[in-house]
Each structure stands twice: as structure tokens, then as C-alpha cells.
Image 1: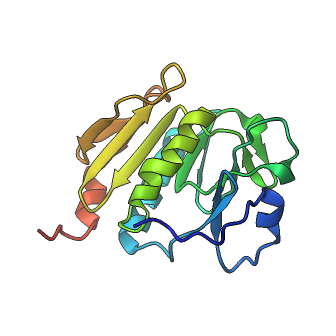
Image 2: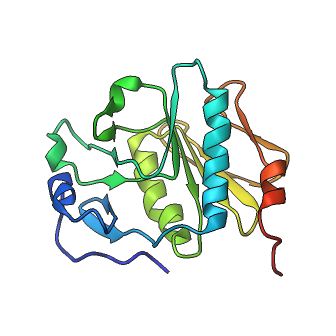
Amino acid sequence: MGLAVRDHNYHTYADYLAWPEDVRYELIDGTAYLMAPAPTLEHQEVAGEIYFQLRQALAGKTCRVFIAPLDVRFPKTEAADERIDTVLQPDVLVVCDLSRLDHRGVCGAPDLVVEVLSPSTASHDHVWKRRVYERSGVREYWLVHPIDRMITVYRLQDGEYGKPDVMELSGETVVGILPGVAVRWDALLQRLPKREY
């Protein structure tokens, strides 16, 4: 199941900024997608733990970690901010080029993006967002599946993601673009509800 489309008009960041704040959208190539309702407790546990561990690992280093909601604008050209037609809110992201940060959020590709999947967003994250992250130069893209206890990791090589690494959520997952940084899963998994088969 895909996310609902706001309408069939072409939208830019200027339109996005004018919409009411009580309903959240993401823009992909001018199409506005209604974001899923408030995340589940499991989603928040996973996103929060990843953010917490990355924040600790990056303390005192140049790279910065952020958690949703935060607008990330993906310009295709040097056009003015208001003409950008792709704006996403990744669950967790790391930015190492601090010149991409401004008062509105991030303008340009983060270095690492983590999306925590739910049944209502999985296909959107796997297909549409992956395309945006790949073409924009996100160096590493993680899709964390809390229900299936799996992680899918895409790493950018020669401008493409290629075949991902698919692993169980156990032990730790090394962040390939951040030397010495890994996310450990065992304590988190103990806090999540037991899987129903």
C-alpha cells in the first residue's frame, strides 16, 4: 500500500511551506505524499535508539545526527529554495558537510539516511525514497524492519546503490561511511514486543 497523494498538481517547496502545519507531507519530484499518522511505539523505540547511539558515537566529531521531523531539501539544480520539488523527512540522518545545514533544515544529500519501516510506508521507502537518495548522492541508506527484525543497507558506489546487504537485526551493524561507528541491536530488541508468527 502506498502513501496517499495530496492531489495531482505539481508542487514546490514554496507551496509546501504554505500548507498547514497540522498535516505533514513529503514532496518527491513535485508530487505531495501525505505522511503516515503518528509512528508506532516500536518505530519510535528503533528510531530513538539509532539516533541515541549515533549521537554518542559522533560526540566531538564533525558529523551531526538528526531525527525526524526535519526537512531535507534535495535540489536538482542551483535553483532557489522555493523552486525545489523534493523534500523528505528521514527518520534519522547524519550530515558531515555542515555547509548543508541552515535554519530550515538540510539542503542537499545527507551522508547517512535511516528509515524505520512500517507496513504503510515500506513500499514508499523501498522504491520512491530509495530513488531520491540514490540520485542525490546519499552515501549510505538503511531500511530497518522492526517487525521482521531485518536491516537492508544500500551503499553508494559509482553513483548507484546496486545490490543491498540484507541482515538480521542482531549484534551490531557497522556504518560503512563512518569509521569506528556501529549500531548495536541486542538491548533494543529486548525492549521491543515479541514477534507474532
